[in-house]
Length: 493
Image (cartoon, rainbow, N blue to C red; front, side):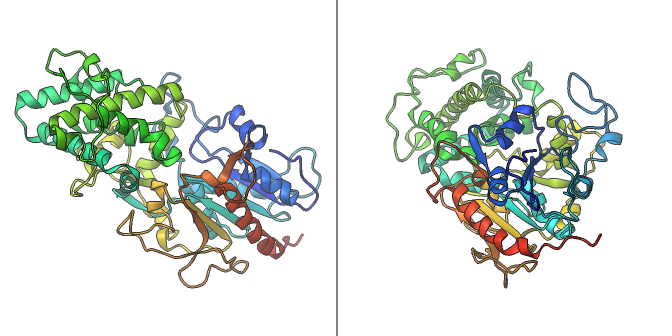
């Protein structure tokens, strides 16, 4: 909590940390304003309020059960995880907001007497939108950034947005390389399939950021797991287009793929992983790409090399896991039990970049490999009841980065990245308090060239010039709060 700027009567800015534990360092980074300015603190300063950082149940230290100290998994299994639901987690926030009375404050700071405003991005942004429909009497307003609100079991649209930002030679070579591997594994001779399987296995072993680095033999991987190894640059990397944009996430990867030199390259059952790891990467890229210039097989090995090198670079950039051992179970449980939204291959798409082995069946297999007690399919109805693409909550600002793949499931999705999107128009005209926008409009904005949740914070070193996603988001939300806060009426004593 940061109450540095608080003056009596000021609002509470509730920043939802989403699907991750919040360490002391994270809390200091969000609330301390030392290197970055976060929206919650900026708004608390502007409106003389209090900024709160919220840790979701069953993440970090917010757990009421014992865990396996080695794996982080709940010892009670289903009896523990059955309480990790969307409704239970939303009710936690309602209880907190209606009972909040921190030390050092004598005035009533509960939602009965003080306006509470929810700020969240991604899953937390989805929650920000839902809470205004579920408990509008508790949270007077919300800022929902990069919120994938559409309930769906499986989505192929996520990778459409990734593909759109890639150079055509690179995306074409990725498509060819993955298609080659899929075809050989599914329909090739046993000898050819064994070589391809071993190459993928060695690429996973050589990648320090791979989830399969401890697998002992190629036969230890099922085809859908081989698909996950193949999809590393887009699926499991810690440096994604979603969060960092094309240049940082895939720029060097595409360069290595297109500059891979096949001279003197051979791979067989006796080849060490070093032949995949090392290459001079000194060919001049062509507009047509590696597969067109050489062959599908050459593109496949160039792709494995580029993928390994991306993993090495990712690991150097972020050597630790993005999630704690506990969190690595909690979020998959939510996905498998309620959320869904599994990112799968669109194998029929002519430029698909994800292995066809990553599909609905593999998603279900992955869930049941993790949780034998998981339902056959996620119960997405528990979230779809809030409206998905069609939702029209009042006093909510929706924002998205145009480059963010998760925009494909947001209310500001467009058919260029998701053919099923409703193409709802956005407006920056502030709706009347407690009324949804007129017609089919969405109140908010989409930022050009921006990525996932980019508007919720910015480095202090970046000047306030009014053009960054953060500056634009803050300006519009302040305009909205100036119209909505006067509507707040304390509950009768």
